[in-house]
Each structure stands twice: as structure tokens, then as C-alpha cells.
Image (tube, rainbow, N blue to C red; front, side):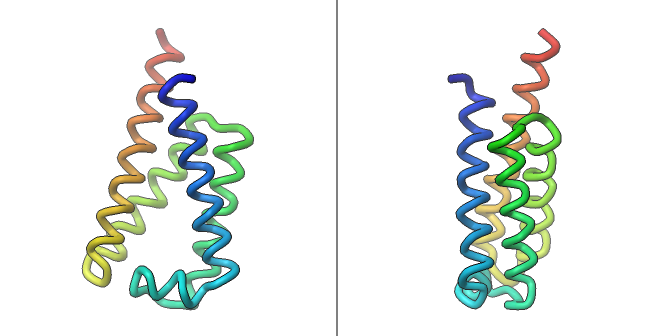
Amino acid sequence: MNFTRTSTQLLGIGSLAFGAWGLVHPRSFASMANDDPAMARWLGARDLAIGAALLNAGGSKALALRMVSDAADAIRLRTRSPKVALGAVGFAALAAIALMTGERQRHA
């Protein structure tokens, strides 16, 4: 299994897990990030959709969505929850590396 495929699957599974958490236990999800509970369900739905896209189709569009979403979360949470923001940066970086690696392999 190559890096891009493995990363895409891991990001997809993680996205589904975070998405389910945000939908099933929005207060818990929001308190983990010191975030607004009203946002938890929206973020959960977003992550479920991205997770499904990553696991179903994979590809550059799904990886780009994951990268942009995590970068936006990192920016939004940087002062409220620096540790969670740093984790989001890590996920965004993994998605970016997988995206670049996949593009390089496609054009090789």
C-alpha cells in the first residue's frame, strides 16, 4: 500500500470518527476544543461527509477538502484551544503531503 492510499484511508477513518462524535455527543466534542456547542453538529456533518469522500473516492478533491477544513479549524481554534489547533495543523499537513505525493505519482 502506498503512502497516499494509506494516508487517505487513515484520514477518512479519523474524519468519520470525529464526525460521529460531533453528531452523537456535540457537547463533549465542543468541550474538547473549547468550542461553541452549536458548531459541533455542523462540524460533525462536515467531517462525516469528508470521511465518506476520502474512503469512497479518495483523490485530490477529498484530500484538499480535508486539508482546507483542518487549516480553517486550526486558525479558528488557535487561541481557544492551542493543542487542538496544533493537532488540526498536523492533520492538514498529512493531507497536504498525501495530496502532493498523489499528484506527483499521477504525473510521473
